[in-house]
Every structure is written in C-alpha cells, then in structure tokens.
Image 1 (cartoon, rainbow, N blue to C red):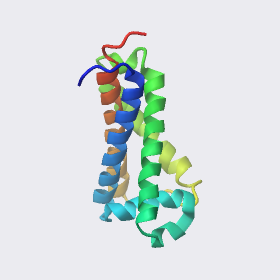
Image 2 (image 1 turned 120 degrees about the horizontal axis):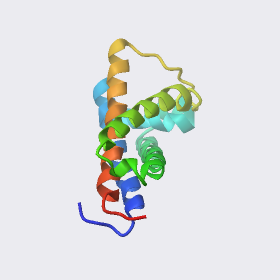
Image 3 (image 1 turned 90 degrees about the horizontal axis):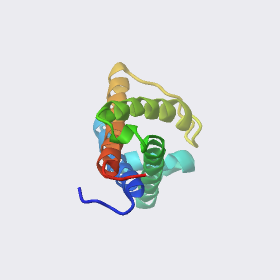
Image 4 (image 1 turned 180 degrees about the vertical axis):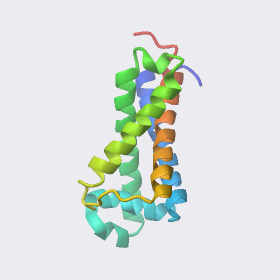
Length: 154
C-alpha cells in the first residue's frame, strides 16, 4: 500500500470501511438474509422495528450507520495501539483479541440497548459464526493499522 501523509486517519477509515462492509456480507451469509434486510436491521438500532418495513432509505441509513460504527471501532483500536502494538509482529493476535471485545460489546451492550431492544440469543452455530465474523473484523482493522502505521514515526 502506498504511504500516506495521515497514516492514523488512513488506517482508521480504510480499516473501518473494509471491515464494516465485509461484516454486512458475513451477517448475510450467517443469517441467510439478503444484505438489504441486514442493513434494515442495522437501521433498526435507531428507528426500531419500523425500519424492517422500510425500503432503500432505511437500507442506506443502515449502511451509513454500519460504516460510522465501524470507523469508530477502528479509530479506538488505531488510537490505542498506534505507538507499539499496531506495528509489532504480534498485530494479528491483537486484532483477533480486539474482535472478541467487539463481539462482546456489540452483542451484550449495543444491540440490547438499541431501539430494537434485542437481547442476545444464539444457537451454537450462530454464536460461533458471529464470533468468527468479529474475529475477522478485528483482524482486518489490525491489518490496516499495521500496514498504514508501520512506516509512520511519532
């Protein structure tokens, strides 16, 4: 990847956008729902169940919310790890560990307190699949942090 003048910003935005977009695809594969339905569920975090009967506007809001949350999640990782961890050889493990944190926060704090008020409920398959998706999310964020911050000096 080419060097950038703003490596923290680049790591945050690229990590968040790529991980967030792939996360919608993973949720679609895990649930069997069309990605548009997944995006409406995401919009439901703000709008409640009415979002599920909506159309493209609700799906677009869901995508914007997904990208916004993903960029914030990436920013937290990048800002906490930029000095040492993001550039260390152990970056993949830190990213996977961050994925566990993301899984716990999203499923046990964010979603239950959203407008959908959905308590976590998992089958064995959905627990493992959703955890794996968040491990991948964390790994992607860590990958962008590593590649964008490796040559940066602070």
